[in-house]
Image (tube, rainbow, N blue to C red):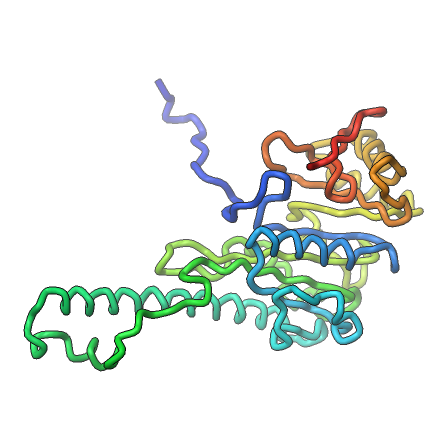
Length: 309
């Protein structure tokens, strides 16, 4: 018999988008940390490709001042130049919200119109006289009476926002609204028709994890669902990251998996571009730690890697 004082955990998951078990759950809040030239953009573009290959990326918003010089990197990804935003634009965060709200409004309008269309079809199939059929519905759908369309057939779009080359810009400022957006990223733009939020995946690339001037704020870092760390010579930065992931591993364990990730192995990886990928909420059976996305590693010295098929 359950005690009324027992804590009852709600059913369902905070991650609403279905992804392959070998991948991560969505929506994500991902921070990618590495020096210039380490491979941050390459990792993120491939991460976005993995999302798209699973049917989990319909719209990409870019917050970057360097899109034109990096344009080739995003070939094949669903990025519209209307959705490229200057990180120094004081309305940048509001523009992100407006894009997601616009998708929500389009979805709700589709379902609203579909409901009216179905009502018209119901009246027509009832064989009632034409003069008894709702005139407004007849006028709305016209002679062709085409069924309403939505570019995803009524499915919620999966939206991702990538903030790149923005360290020191206004979007990381205290008044930009970015911290609030990050806190609410899974709850943005509630659809009345579907009674659920569209949400958004947020990805940040930075050369400095704990920059004191317009850098990745503690709010963003503390809400991360995943973190990718490239090779660094800064023991201070590593120690700082180790402290912030201490919720599921000790500093010693973190340093162990970091060392494993930066070591060459038989999979053909190049240590200078290796990355330690930390997933705070992995699919069941997966490790919290990976090397280069495709090798799971474990916080035990001498542990064997498990290559993902």
